[in-house]
Length: 630
Image (cartoon, rainbow, N blue to C red; front, top):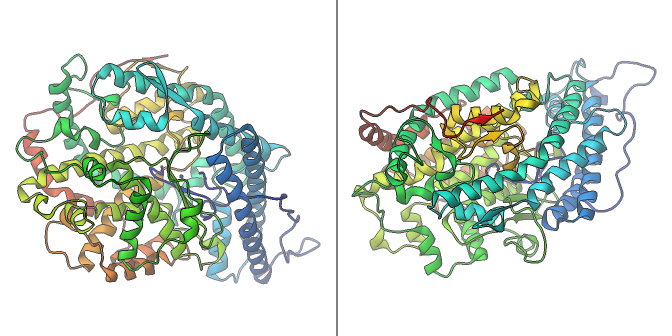
């Protein structure tokens, strides 16, 4: 779910993704002035700032549990009544956050503050996801719209062969269906889910921008970007630099994949030059392409000797066993098992009797150990990896649960997303042998390395382009450079610019394609997922170094290594108490986020792709597959 009691609150969920992305009782009563604030207009001092922060942490901590419980019920039991309860909870949450953010700003000019108090005041001002202006009724309107958008997504359905199907089923079918007409049907019908959201989203932007400006930010995008221990401009530049480092790898993968799809479908479906047709890539949003590995696998080395989907079925895995296996990876590193309440309170499979939000998310309802996941888990390789990701959130949440409330979060939100993904990188053939899923004699030899790396690249690398563009679009929407009457055109223009993909059918401004991705109606900032794509490889490379791994980086598994677990836990336990470069340095030894580990991991594959693509025009700025209709 979206994070509401500050972006860092554990009571809120953390989504895959992204991300991808809680109360009962009466509303909390909020006093009008900060604790210890001076009277008669006298300037506040450092002692009053300390008292204010202490009170805010108590009030927000109590309120977050109430909000988490309401949000959990709404996400796992969508009705008009739970929508109403969640909207009311969100309105109270937003009003409380905005009030405390404005009160925190009163201490901006105070001298003599401890670094701890100053950091907490900054967090209060910067970490609101959807700030409402202080005028009467604004918080309620914003919360109602936000809840309506999320529930519209949760209730959404598309079609397959003319039959209505929920999004989670269509996502799975997109990975297995190879008929381009059926792929087009699923893509088009699911993207229609966004159409009714357009007016609500425009209004949400107007209100949240107004709230951000009241807090001293140029717009909501600038406010989101201020939350990374650097200026909004510096953060935008960091994203551009990181993408520039890995883009050449993506371009080679795109070029190779286009040629394979052209061989499969022909020029009429997938031309040999220009962009890729978005629905042919095995994923509703073209953000991961590993489901079409069978179409692009290299001759001779493409068959890696096993299929994880088949292994899970053959070993009689069910959804719960998949989650138990994910937990076992973390306990092998020395982390304590998940509490019994996790198994009693999580939603691991989709209930048959009600509407739910299936998008996977991890929750810490009480900021201590009421850990849960919410998933409509299927027995397949994708959800096997997703479980490792979501549990990464849960173990991170518990690692820092002794921090003060305002430090209950990751060093930056990309760290939270990266931890589980780092674990997932360690799901190698050797790991599958160690847990009994794969026979030792079926571990692919070195001649299969290109196949292994290509499959991994199809999962990881397209997501780098996808995750950088989603918030590029939102930042443009928030600052006005993307006008409401160009929402859809701008979205698909960015998809083409960064990913080289286009819709399978003509689009217009009657459509709202961004609404077909949970994180847009769910209002989950997305830059975290781009950062995670970089950080997971930095963390993974360092973990392999600690474990003493000597072979090719992509073959490393640190499953069972307690030294890695101890050093990882030390970083996780820091929470948000220090700037993220400090946390990065604590585990990796460097303060710089970069794409070097990504390129080191995929170096053999990139060299092979460049050879395969020799003589090809590896660009996509040609004609679109389907023109935009004004």
